Amino acid sequence: MENLRGATAPNSRIRVTAKIKTFVLDTNVLLHDPQSIFKFEENNLAIPVEVLEELDSIKSEQSTERGRNARRVHRILQELLPDTRSMHEGVELPNGGTLSVIINPYLAEPGRHSPAMDRLRAIIPDLSKQDNRIIASALFVQEQYPPPTILVTKDVNVQLKARAVGLESEDYMNDKVPQEDEEASYREIPLSIYELQRFCSEGEFEIDSRAARPLYLNEYVLLRSDEGKTMPARYFGEGFVRRLKIPEYVKAPGGIPIRARNLEQQFLMDALLDDSIHMLTCFGKAGTGKTLLSTACALHQTHDENSRYDGVSISRPVISLGKDIGFLPGTLDEKMRPWLQPYYDALEVLIPSKPPRDPQFASKKVSKKKHRKRDDFMASMMSPQPGAGSHGNHTVGLIKPYERLLKTGLVEIEALCFIRGRSIARRFFILDEAQQLTPHEVKTVITRISEGSKIILIGDPAQIDNPYVDSRSNGLVYCHNRMKGQAIAAHVKLTKGERSKLAELAADLL
Image (tube, rainbow, N blue to C red):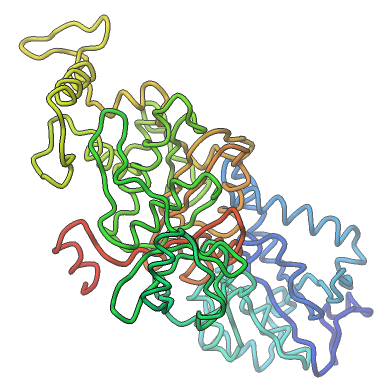
C-alpha cells in the first residue's frame, strides 16, 4: 500500500486503526481557530500543501484578524514541523494525534491516474482552483488509507462539492454550542398566593427544587401563583430568588424618561443597572428595544459625578472584526457613522431636539420649574459653538443635543479593527451585532475590558451575514453558552417587539 507521502515518506506516522479517523483541514478552519490543530483528539490530521499557499497570501494582511491568524498558524506549524524529515513523515501531537502535510502526486504528475481522481476530474474538471485542489488532496488521502477520511471546512459549497465526489465532509464543530430546543425567554416558577405575598414583602424567597431543571446563576424567572398573580425575580444561587431592583424610568442627561414596556425589558434593565454584573448578553429580534434600552441605561449611569463609569463606548462589526474601514475621508466617527446609525437614531429619541408629543415619554407630573430647567438646558445644547459665525439666514455651528455627548467624549465610537492592545477602563461598552463575530473575535473584545467597566453584547442569532459562522457557532451565542452561570454574567432574551405593530409583524412573518 502506497503511503501518504509516496516515495518520499517511507516512515509516515499516520496511524491506521479501526477507531481512528483522518481529518483534512481547509484553510478557513485554521483561520477561524488557529488552535484547531490541537482539538482533534487522537485522530490523524492532514493539511494539504495548497492550504499553506492560501495562508501565505493572507499573512500580509497586517490590520486584519485573518492576517494575524494566518501568521499564528505559520508559527504553530513552524514549531511542530521544524525540519524536512518531520514535514515529510509527519509528527505526533501533544494530544495523541498526528499531523502531516499532504502533497498530492496526482496533481504534481497529471499523467498518473486513479479511480478517485478520474471521478473527480469528470465531476470537477477545473483543478486550477485552490478549493478543488484541496478536495483532490483529501480524495488522495481517502484512497491511500483505510481510516475514514473527512474534509473539515466552514465553506458550505466546498462541503457540497466534496460530497458530490464521494468524500465525507463536515463543518468545524469544536466551537459550536450544543443543539438545543428553542428555549423560552424566561421560565415560570409556581408558588402559592401566600408564598408570593411573602416574596413581595421580604424581597426574596427560597424556591427549593420547584423548577423543572436547575436554574443557573443570574437567570431571570417569573413567579406565578395559581390565581394568576405574577412577580419577576432573579436567581441568586443557593435556592434563592430575589426581587428586581429597577427604577421607574431611566434617562440620558437632558433627555426624556424611558420605561421598560414589558417583562423582558424589565429583566434587561435590571441587568444593565446592576454593578455586580460585568458582562451581559442579549438576544432579540428587530424592534425589541435592545439598542434603545441599553443606550438609555448606559447614559443614565454616566451623567452622575459619582458614577463608576466615565462614559459610554459603542461599536459594532464592520462586516467582521478586523476589516479595515477603508481610506474614506473624514474622522473615525464620520467613517463609522453609517455602521452606527442605529445608535444615532437611539440618541435622537433619548435626547430629542424638540419636546416629544408622545405622552409615553413624558413624566406623570412635571413642575413648571422642571419644564423651565429643561427648556434652558435644551437652549444651551442648541446654541452655536464658540467662534461660530453665520452664513446667510442660517447660523453656522448649530448641533443636535446628543452631539454634545460625542464632542465631550461622554459617548465614544470604537472601531473593532483598532481594539487589539487596548485596555478599556471605567466605560460602559455596548457591542452591537455581536452575532456577526467569531468566538475568537468576541474573546478579543471582552479581554480588553478592564476593572470598573461593563460590556453588553447584543444581537439577533437569526440574522447572520458572516459566511463562516452560524446560529450555533457565532460569538454571541458561544459567549452566552460558556459564561452561563458565572456570578458576574447574565443573559436576557427579548421576544416582544415594541417598535411598531408593522415592525413586529414583519419580524415574525417575513
